[in-house]
Length: 230
Length: 336
Image (cartoon, rainbow over all chains, first blue to last red; front, side, top):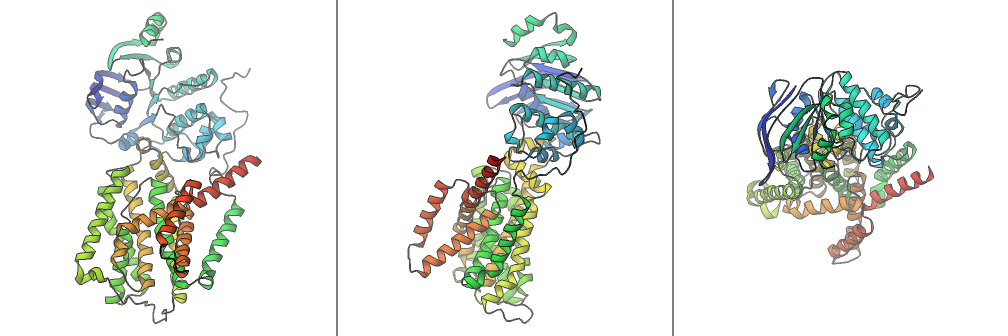
């Protein structure tokens, strides 16, 4: 579904991604793990078309994304859940959910969202800024689900969440996979990643240094933690 | 056994009306305020000099146009006088040379502003923040230069004089009657602005203001929305400018001067950015204050109004109407 070939990107003189090659298959959950500053968020932003200074090729559903602006990438089926929660503070929960443009007929209905996230139903008229951090992450995820995006780019969806909410996010990701969705997940929490992912890429100093199946994680767990600096 | 991760509630929650009362006053309060506003608008020329009342209408439209861009789209324009003035000149030229009835002349003038706004907006929205403001200022200065130099059309420094008030033979020489003839146009403009911000389009503008990158990632062409907002804003400013020309009977270079743009921003800040009606309140207050100070014989009107502006901005960060609204919401939330 997604193929990244020889992707390099930077900020000014600083090169953050160096010749990254990776792919995400349809229906997979693939995580991108690495320390802070490894380039994980930059990679997602490159795929989403929100980062200008980049070289290389990104192909989605067989079509190249070169010179395709971000809003058109979203309409082609890419959905981005940013790491900064990404809700519109001045809009209510309901208004945040009504905002996304549906990019496919498979977008979640509002009723489905409220069924999956009852806390959002309870707070539907509250300004998004009044939600807790975890609730805002739920809202950001729910908003992208409304679009029916075929590939979700999730940037650290469990950061700062309680174990309960983390488990809920895991359920949602598994539900997305079970219903045919595909997820590229940036995650520092390897324990969480191992519960949802099919494959993992390890990113260090802008390069892919390792790629492994989820079945290998258990055997190499402490080695991976060491690599992540945990 | 129900686990802690059981996501399905015991029963399907009814969705009901989604857009609740979060950022809005209760319906009864809204209706009351609307009735009050309509009542004041209808009564106004009976309580104050009708020329001042007309200026309030014109400036209310101008302020609302600026707030649509600044408060709802996050774009500060220092060039809106270009649209206010272009409409004023266009309206005046149609009224003087073609004897067009004033409502049509005003609409045509606003249309001219919208047409002018298209290329300016197309270029200006490529930049954001202070750079956007500077680009709009630069274009406004170009319009000022054209108005100054194109003397055969605009009258240059002398301006355009003798702008008639044509309306199918009706005698509108008394500004009192002109006010009521112009009120539907102003009301339509204000209603259009209200409708724009309370629509899905308005929500997208707010999302662009809050975070353009995120809005792009949701599939919206941010540039196209910004340009559309810019053109709509210019049209509204043009409505005000056209009425201003008819009300005063002349158009001068002041209408396209950059300080006029600054005054519009001031009234919006005074009333409350992003509140829409704050701009109306701010413009009514400022026009009234300037009139009262002039009548009272004060010569340093600008100094006094500027001082009041500084005090209001320091004391009421959200503007007058913004502060009132925030106090209401705090009171309501405290009672819950």
